[in-house]
Every structure is written in C-alpha cells, then in structure tokens.
View 1 (cartoon, rainbow, N blue to C red):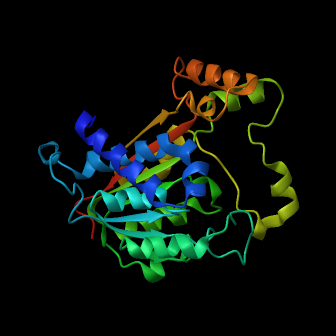
View 2 (cartoon, one colour):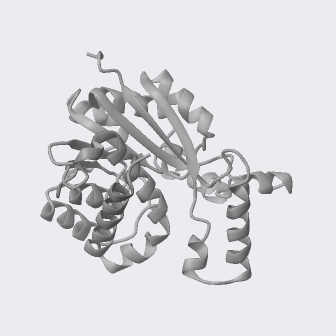
Length: 281
C-alpha cells in the first residue's frame, strides 16, 4: 500500500494529463480514470521510496515504457510525475491495418507528446525487440492492451527483455471474471459482446478483445514469462456510469459493481504486477 500523499500526487498528475489533451479525449476517457489511477498507484509504489513523497518530480531519473499507449493520457501523467517516458502505439495513429481505433486528431496528439518530451514509437508491439534495447527501462506499463493480442507471451517476453534487472511490469486489463460477465453467462449470454466486429472484420482488421483473463491467469502468464513476486487484484469504480448520466441502466450497473465487492476477484478490472529478477542478464 502506498501513502495517501503519493496517491494524491498520482491523481494530480492524472488531472494535469486530462487538462493537456484535447477536450474530446478528456471527455471520452474520463470514464477510465480509475484504471489510470490504479496503474499510477502501482508504479509509484514500486519505484518511489516512501521517504521521497515530498519530491517535486517523484519519478525523476526513472525510465518508463508505456506499451500500447493509446491516446496517451496515462503516458502524460507518468511524464508529469518526472519519468523519462517512451510510448509504443500503432493502432491509434496508423490505420492501415484497421479502422477500429480511428478517433481523429492523431497529429495533434503526437505533437502534444513531443511538446512534453515523450518519445513515441508508432510501431507494432510484436516488433519491440527490434527497436527497444534490452535492459533499458525501470518499469513498463500496459493498460487494456493484452486482451487485444493474439500472442500475449511474445508481448510479455518482449517487456521482460526491455526491463532492467529488478524492473517492474504493470499490466491492467478487464477481468474476465467480473460480475457482469458472470451474470451474462448465468442468463445464457456470451460474457463478451463484440461478436459482430470479430466475425465481420476478419483476422487482420479485428483488433478488439481476442481473449480476456482471470487474475490468477495473469499471475501464471507473468510467471511463465520470467517475472517474480507476481501479484494481482481486481478493482472498479462503481459509480463511473452514474457520473456520465443517471438512468435505469446506470443505476443497475452501479448496483452490480457494488455487489462485486462482496465476491473474491469479481470487480470489473484487474491489475497484475511483476518484477524481473535482479540477477537477470
């Protein structure tokens, strides 16, 4: 557990990031604030000694890789905390493979990253070992990426290679065992709801959720890729839909989220943290 002061600093950096991006992005991704917060809490928890909480740049001197950075809100927050930040993202900027993540203003986002000193790689995740030097980062984060990948082991192996000995990986992804998925299955519905784009777009153009994972599966995957001291937990913001609008649907979802806190590992999202061995070459 990190201190309340570090949590506050993480939230401040996130708000600074929301203020830096185009208004449409701040609005569209405000719902994801809790996931961003959880990753930032974990990042500060593993990289910042509690005695350093009063420093102005908490992550100064640290190198952090954001793999699958999307529109870059989390990336900016990490940068505002002082880290040298590198970001890999193909599908938000290069739409030659698929239109699924086309939102516009791509050049404005890349210019914003450049303004704040973020190093961008508009490249595929699977090519990391061709442009990311080994043992070069103190930490790597990936938020809602691994569920989109056909070869998650290749992905985690590449992150392991990119980390310095003793470096940390933080993976956040929707929890396949979330309460909503359990209820959908109970009532005869598929827990995943993106069958139409999956079926119609085909193998190359579909970049949605190929597979989702349980917290225990995330732990197993990270261990199989060589990480140590692996742990995972689930979380959610029960009221995020109510913050957008009040309706019978949002009230029902809030109730489901609240009930999820009564069951083990039933909350909407999962975060997994692992460490590369300090003895690793």
